[in-house]
Image 1 (cartoon, helix red, strand yellow):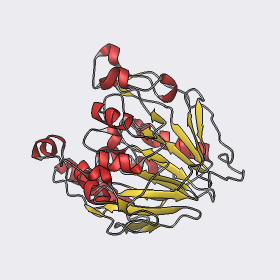
Image 2 (cartoon, rainbow, N blue to C red; image 1 turned 90 degrees about the vertical axis):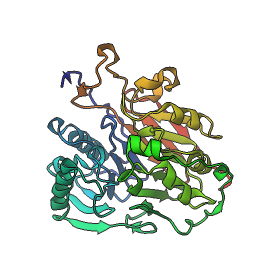
Image 3 (tube, rainbow, N blue to C red; image 1 turned 90 degrees about the horizontal axis):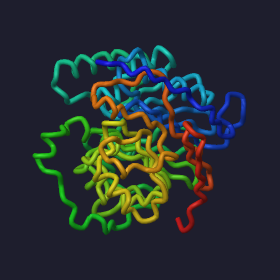
Image 4 (cartoon, one colour; image 1 turned 180 degrees about the vertical axis):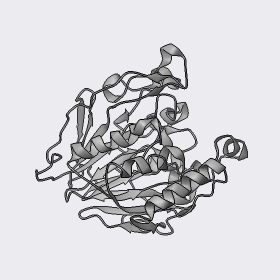
Length: 359
């Protein structure tokens, strides 16, 4: 494996209240680049933190370091709630290295892995030992995560989805018409067992609403959103499954009707062409932000100002290069009135979205 030597410095982009010792009045969300894995940090105005997934293992603790850097930027010194959406290496793998850098108080997940491979089982066993050192909770749809000032609700876990709609949701979803389930050809090619058990969550802060789905699969989106939309609309869509084409159906994204979306893709992982096409058709979606330039879609990528990390290794034409060192994140500062600002930490480019009317 060849290691790319490029190292990027984090830009110092602070929203009001993100530094330690200041009064915070926003929900701050850091979509952290873990090279096609997942790690998203939520910090409430109370200073409580929730991290969703921990990125990859190895690479000299690269992903744990990136998470710790975001935590320092946010002015926090521990992870109060760690949600491991499912037990794949790009979501669970960095947990041990992270715990060496930041104490984790509460572990939340869907229970036990269903993967049968020897390496997967060994990695899960290490995680079980780690979570036994804190408070562990197996979550189910409808459960809440107690964070002062936020409404965090589990909407899918271990293959189950919400049985009843969230408050204010539950309207018929016209985008369910003609829903086409993915068949065995797709499921066998990409795997499905752990992905479909992903923990997915709704996050509310006053009038602001968002969802983070893990790798919840296309077929599992159907019972969540059809025939009635059990989630309602959101302001910010944290794009499912790294933007892979195996998630993010019209029944989900059209019904959520987000105003902005952030895709935590890697240069060669996620960021599927069909996902870009589906998001482009969402009425009212003003902007798609990307954590990485997506090599495979070319001109479908957003303008560079909306992309946090531009390195793609395309010149070497190697898929096995690894970028070590720091990287840039996408930062969201959400307000109780439903307005929010998205900032690309690479260049300081930001855009403010006003409160949504008519909700």
